[in-house]
Image (tube, rainbow, N blue to C red):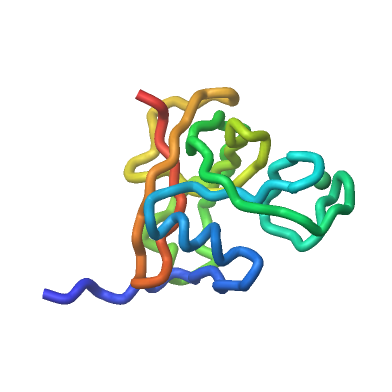
Length: 138
Ligand SMILES: [Zn+2]
C-alpha cells in the first residue's frame, strides 16, 4: 500500500539550508555556527549578523529547548490544513539560543505554558523532507 502524497506546502531546499534538512532526514538537529564568534544562527545565512564573519560550520544540537509561544489557527489559510483546524504553530527556543517555528508532534498537550521544556521529534513527510516537530519533555 502506498502512502498518499503529502498535501501541505513543503519548504524549498535552498543551498544555505541544505545541512539542516539533511540533518533532519537523519533525525539530527543541525544548526549553523559562526566560526569567529561562536554564535548559533537560524535560519542559515552567509554572513553572521553579530560579527559579519562569512566563516561558519554546522553542529548537531540536542533538540531540547523551551516553549516561547503558541498561536492557535482557527481558519485554514491553506486548504490542506482544513482537517487540522484548530492547530497550533509554536515558537521554540533551542538550548543553543536560536528560535524555530514548528508544530506539536502528534496531539497537542493539554497544558503547555511559556518556558515548558520541549524536545525535538522528527516527522518524515516525503523522500527529501523530514519536518522538525516538538513534544513536551517527559
Ligand atoms: Zn559571528
